[in-house]
Image (tube, rainbow, N blue to C red):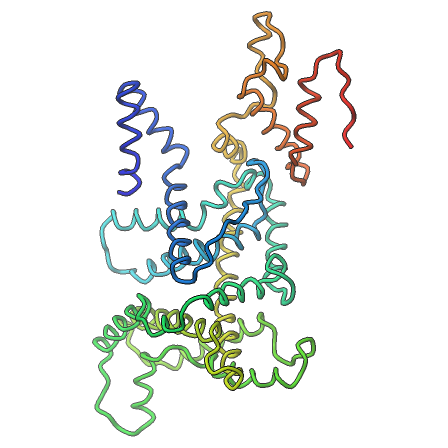
Length: 423
């Protein structure tokens, strides 16, 4: 509804100026170019950074550093840029949609939800030039992303750990009292706990192990947190380079294994399985927010340093496994789309509205001079820029402004003008 409402001003403007046919054509062009997908992605981006600035501050001018719009971005860069703002939440919405299995909410709900998930998770790759041009590039991107995901040291562009710690430490700019404000995850945990209690009514209190096991469905998965509390003090006895602590990869796999053991120890009926899993997930995400604030603000100072490090390692273990699943699914989808014949050509046509590789020759057929820097139209220059950039990207490199300008000068220079060779 928001996307359709945002198109009404354009529809009315084109209708008043050019008529109904032009207005319908304009709307169809917007739909075929997937403008609603881009609008949903852009709205989520603005909302995320407005909210992050209100909570954590840090508003500043950040240069984009973009080159030409035809340059292909690597998978790891797109993941690093949009995971925290779009991909993770899109994955969470898709997961919550799976929890609604067996309950029908109407086709409008499912269409809007699926549209939101696709816009948030796949828009960065859909609008990335030459994303589906070669399956080899997708495999290379996946290998590079796995290397980044498994690296422990380096800056944010080299190590997933540095990137994840930076996303966590940015909470330090906010007030620690936010931890006591009930967030929507807290209320979700409370509501799902009430739902579980209605479906799994515990028996009367008895000081037995059997009665204690009835409370397991209400507790968040705390087994991995206990392991992190035990191993964190060991890091104070050794230097960082010789730390006996397992890497974040081992911690991530160990956390999932311990959580699976915890879930297998729960006794529940089949009818309440979905509610219990949903409550476990909501409790886990809420507890991760609490641990993020503890690790960022470090209350208590050095006396509770082992608790701060345990919270940081615990949240890191679950987030690593989530990012592993999310990135693998997205890479697999990109690889499967690369196998579709002619999809790369359609993708270029979808992004740039043409598939020409040479300049138009309509002027020459009328006896007019060929385009030069003085009489070439803006569309002609755009065709050359895109063509030269695609040639550079196809060879595995990114076209710079200097390379493209030099090739344009060679193409448009008069015959009596000698163009110097490129440095």
